[in-house]
Amino acid sequence: MASDLETEEDSQAAPGDEPGDGPSGEALGWRDPVRWVLGAMVVGWSVVFIVLGWIRQARFATYSFDLGIYDQAVWLLSRFHDPFVTVRGLEFFGHHVNPIMVLFVPFYWLGAGPLFLLSTQVVVQASGAFAIFLLARDRIHDRWLAVALAGVLLLNPTYQWLTWEFFHPDALAIAPLLFAYWAARTHRWKWFVLFAVLAAACKEDVALAIAVMGVLIAVRGNRRIGLITLAASIAWYTIATRVVIPLSNGIGPFYDTFFGDLGKNPIEVGTHLATHPRQAVELATEHDRVSYYQMMFAPVAFLPLLAIPTLLIAGPMLAVNIFSSFPYTREIRYHYSSLVLVGIILATVEAIAWVAVKKPGLVRFMVGLVVASSLAATVAWGPSPIGVKYHSGVWPLQVDTRQGALDDAVASVPDGAPTSAIYNLLPHLAHRDEIYDFPVPWRNVNWGVDGEHLADPARVQWIVVDRREMSAEDVALLDRLTTHQFHVVSDRDDIVVARRVHPPPRGQPDVSISPRSPS
Image 1 (cartoon, rainbow, N blue to C red):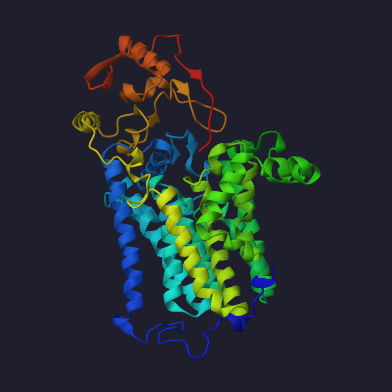
Image 2 (image 1 turned 180 degrees about the vertical axis):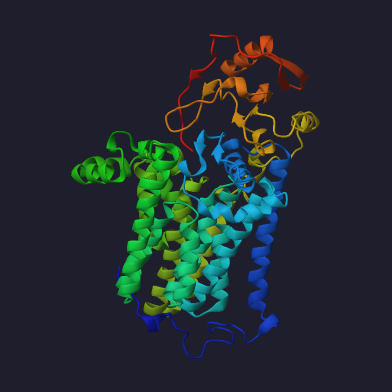
């Protein structure tokens, strides 16, 4: 709709706004109740999800994918070792291009680890509420309504689930993208460049969302800046996916294979969908897709549909999620929805801003509607303490009776020893050059791009697993290994720690291939 084609004057404060409505908001200073309420929301949200995340890590309910991947990667970078992530079987930048992770390295020199990654992600996510407040304040010219819309972001079920899934750089990209959009809307170009660069550094596909922002900037009157943004974003995406990743892993972007028969790269997929429109429509309207649309848009009362141009920021990633053959891309709980959420939230604010111009008397109703929708959605679908899913087992609220055995098992593995660990124990052992996600390296599960160059099992000196979390096939493998090659150091409550005592038998490699699922 034309609602998004506002002029520069539309984004300036209206005469007669209450004190503090201007760009600086300094009129009331530290006594400003708006600041206190907004700050309390952000701090409270951060505390809740940091505490829940710490509990989850302490009680062995976090996983190798993807927390273990990023934790080992940053640890390797901090020790100036080759960042070959043995959790994934890929060079770090052969997995995704996340240069933002280099900023974590100094903290790892001081002893940081997975809990630091979690805390940072939560705080960065929470800061996105400030960006939405600023945007809504400048677009709607009502600071209290802006606070309410900042709360809409924090209430969003997907935004909350991202803290549960932790850790993913996609989630880190949300706040800088929101700030970049606000900066562009208010022509703060230096800030726009800073936030856009930070966002693009989080992951290669963020550049596609920034490219759409560039188009919007150009259409809204700043053609030169918009075209530069568009060109720079496309160039970065191309370099990251067609140069950096292939050079790092020796093959190419493994996620090009996520689209089945539609094609093996973005151009092939796009061409196939354009030349087979009926298939495209059929895919886009399958039951799981429709359900995904409902769960992403219902929390904001479908208002983004009134601001289609801004909603296009979500377009590239939404298309990936819709046409991917990987079902997790259509789950609101996972990081694949991060960039989609950015477009949805921004379009929500723009839709209400458009209503403010056309029907000023409806603005408070619209904000109230979206707040009510968000609250209902977070109660029904979210993982927060006010959600019905909070006590469903998504958080380990009860201490495992085997907590002592789990703690002892992790503590018994020597620092630096090459280890293969079950997925929920691995995040506690990732600070070493070689840590494998059992049954790797004896069996290929999510190793490399196509299972290439599987590590030599003879390198593994320790095994730490939980029989209750293993398949029958993996238990059988463990039994074979502990019969001849490994000595069981401890076996308590099905938590097994074993140390290598003999090399593998000559000429009898115990390696096989299992189906690969993407991360």
